[in-house]
Length: 354
Image (cartoon, rainbow, N blue to C red):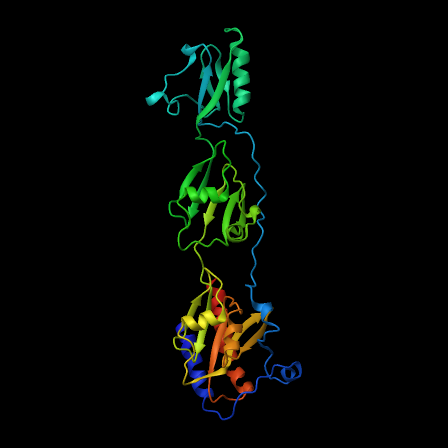
């Protein structure tokens, strides 16, 4: 589709080049009122360039309720070590090298486990301290002043899932150490090259929350790196196409990727070989952009170093169409009338693709 759009625009340039006269850019308010098309034309100057020097899309604050750090609650599948001091007969054999991580009391599906002398102990939904106090109280009937310690040897009951554009999708256990969003993604091998950090989602309790992780990575927004809760599902989506289109009298007309970093007008032109020196009119470097439903055309004159320096401060936005006209130029009304339908079609195609 985009190849057809490029071909159509190139054809329009060749048609306009046949007309006589040179374009006069209607940059004043009175001149623009006389135009046939509903278009705003802005000439880029040192006095207004700062208004366009930052991407229009800022970082969004996370709407996900902040996770809170709390005591770990035991669940079915967890493995518990129960130590009764001075009573080694009540301890299970240790694993290889004296480790207890492979042995212990497994919490059953009903949330209980069996302990010598006292029988069933309810553990699910309780903290290790609550379970310790329960065992100590009940053991006191058999052992004078028992000293008991309860530890979680293996965290198996509560997990978060990390999927999508990460290098190693995984299921990560929740333990005593809080698991933040970036911690979970790092545990999954980190982001893939195609990851979109602006649209990470966390599914929690039947709701899906969008998180702009780039706001944390690039702008230090701490709320965009929330603490995860058991059962959360993190999905990192594939980055969608976000492109500006460079057309007309450019050495290598092409689409420019804007999804990974801000790209200025001068950067984009330079990466595509610059203007076609013999055919391009340096006064006719235009950026077509739809703002609040209205077409806005920015004009940059690159015939002097000042213009190129201004272009280094003009940041392109997705669906922008950069167009370099040919000399001699037709009248502005004729030029804009021929360009607008195809420019609008290119921007609509970008919107549909996303």
